[in-house]
Length: 479
Length: 100
Image (cartoon, rainbow over the protein chains, first blue to last red):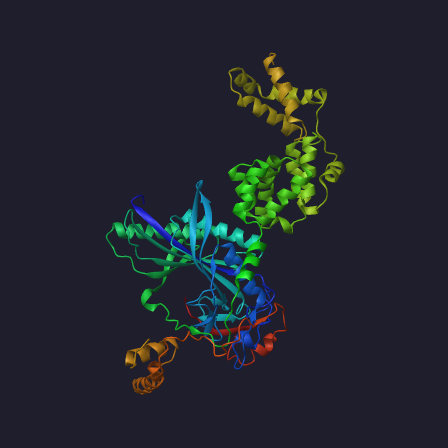
């Protein structure tokens, strides 16, 4: 791979968070009964006229400005014509030669290096319907609820040079969109989708290699895996002296390979022409400036501020600001418990694991900043140990009650009394003679092990600092 | 197809293919003649001098920025939507499988 260079461009489709569809009043709610959210406009029945959703347009402009794009002077829509069962009108209202915005960029940070990934274009279009295939029966089922849901297509320049960089770009894009509150970017529900163009070339070569288009990648991991697979496939073909064919390939998640979907020769001929049912749109300079000024603090800026203001490391600041809800939670907690590093550790450690496990965002749980602040305070005042705090954390998530109350109702408290600890420590030393010898031979880890044993016997209630002191004294004083 | 005055049979077949229409040899010849005629007629427009004219994407030149508010209106019932469907199942339209 070292002698080859990977060139990647990503095309993201983002569902905008509107109540109604982009050209009609049907609901955009996910998971409705099939074909229950359609009307003559989105079904393309004769004689109907589309009218643009003001919020979808505004969200598109807002996103384009956050991505440092220029806004088109005169914005118009076009018809993209193709015949397919997911498209009741036989054309999709999209944008062709005059996308809503162009020439932007996103700044990403990968392997501790900053890089600008340029954005070619951002355009607004309507989504198509959903097809469900029934294997073996030669049948497909069509649900038109998704038809007409507003989509923003965001196309990058081929500035991405590794699968990991591609994933970092997508992560940054997702964070920006969530900060703007224009999309929930849920890859599983399809509100963020991604296609890729990828090619390889011998390092130092000026012209681009033949590219493949990749589709059907439904998670960040899938994007990374599919790109890695495809890059390797290209390099192997080139090494064998074979020719790469321009084609569209699908990522097969189960088999972890890409499979041929169609070659260039079969590529659709979309016969774009201007959509005569929609008038042109313009945004004047004053309005653009007003929207620019109203943009929220974006992830990269917040990250810089977290580093400067709270003295966090780059990594911690990155983890916290990637998710807007987490970054807000962090700042809310600081108001109540002024120790940024401790809060950051909990948010990126135990709390992140619980959220991952439950596949939920922090805003949707009953765990609040006040709970975390109280929990940290209980540890700080040595009422409970860190281990005890970790143990009651899931319960705070489940019940949304204060840590103090859980501590009280369970009768939890730290054992700090040396007398009370002495008998447990006696037991532990008796049962672990080998560790005592190890310690005397200079193995410091033996002490940590013994402290752990005491913690276990006290179900995490012993104060580890005091246990440590007593143990050390006993070991050095001759057991 | 800018400035192309005739349509050959290959183009007719290509366009028919895109529209999922099967044409007989006779039909291909017929449409080739008719489409060439239509294009020839439209081509008259090329005789106009449009050097100083802006491209028109919409006939209502003065009208722009027509929006609707983002509010949900009642949709059709699934039952009505599926009324004319030749084949349906469990609220879905049923179609022959198309792999892509």
